[in-house]
Length: 389
Image (cartoon, rainbow, N blue to C red; front, side):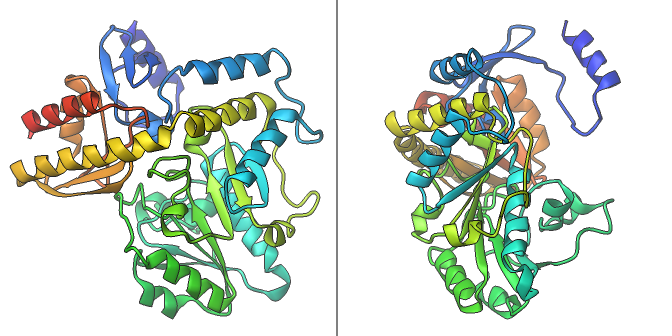
């Protein structure tokens, strides 16, 4: 069966992904199984998506109940799940308004459009982003991404984006000016190598934006919905953005994105100024609302914080044993282990031993497991890594 599926995929699916020769068939909790019956403990979680693990019964129940009522009617009409989800996000964040879409890239597209629309009559349109950042693969979001490899082959990218080093206040102060409409930043850089800022960095960024009269956009596609040990990563610093983007864990595997903004800024979007056919459709928003309720009511964020600290301790122990481990960094259950060797061979060996892990930037193992991961599962991975190294 496996070979037939892979052969069919190679003949019919666009060759944009490099995949290992396994076919994942089902999952439960933090474990997935392939078509051969082999199990894997999942430390990728669909790339920081399945925070409640696979096949969570509460999410399935909400999904099926709504599917039995109403699938889709478009955004020409009010629907209950969309309204309830928006109200929950507003009540539990800095924001006053929510725009729903289908992915993180779309959420960042909406944020970029809103920032430019807000300043349209003033002629301010430039957006400052960070080197090594990642904001998506549409033309606008790859233009806002600070990695040349993402942009390669797509010239000319969209004009109006400037770049400064992450965690460098002076560089930002020198770059921000009267033509700047916004600064877009990930509170923790994920795809860029799991890079955390200095404790006062985001506060200083906020002050620079205020002084320049520019908007501050937090891309929380990867860090949001509990991943860092708080519901939103900005809550660690106490610095509120003007606009925030969410996706990934919001739907626990279902396609949804959201752009959140303060009232005075969101009002720049009038009727017809931005839209989407599928964004906020009833089935998806019903499931997303249940995801948020489970995360908040079952203390999932507390588990993330505690097990994340334990995971860091165990990886630091690993670093003390192996000179090939250069650094361990992260927050909550967004953790990177930087190596002085190529990471892909380790990923493949972990796969052979029953673990799904991810390599970014060529030599950094990124661990973003479900937030329900337990210490026993972490210990088993650490033993595996110790043996491989």
